[in-house]
Length: 258
Image 1 (cartoon, helix red, strand yellow):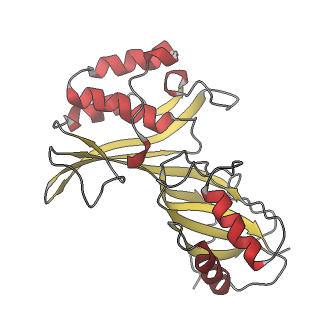
Image 2: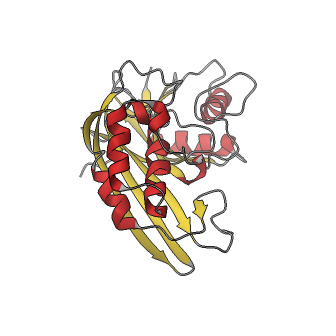
């Protein structure tokens, strides 16, 4: 059966997350239903990451197996037609080898988190940023973020329902930067690792926001990491500012060859 890689963009607000659930609207379920309109049978797709309810994606990656020999253009166009009006789009499609796997072939996941700092309510970006009213000390947040980079036991920043075999992960990057906009400042978090624990990014951001607000010190974050205990974590931030921004592969199926 021909296998295809799909690059997927979605707005997470209407969905109970990526993973298919009984009696819940999910991104995986929407795409599998669209596939069943093209080839009537049960479809199961696999993704690079299972985003939670309310989390968005700029470039989620999944793969599907088809019986017919579809061109990538025809498959993506047909899926987008049947996905309407759900806020999900196939932005790229490429044929891959039969042993290529969206999850297991990935070497890095990249997440973006956006905080908007201003007092006026967000309008155009409502539901797409976490809005806080007070200014944040980005320099202090970056110093605290640097303590988290590297290989650590991240039990403190792991959900109690996380199913990962080990809390030890290697965090490749956690950069915090200020981005000026016409009507407020956004604080962006660029978070990269091969894999993540459940709620790890939102636990990082919620804790670092406390540093930016002055409620925590930089050293408090170091102590929280060293505690290896979930109660030591700061508040977990809401999902609406989180985006799965990209997935890296040794041989990117979406990179055109010339």
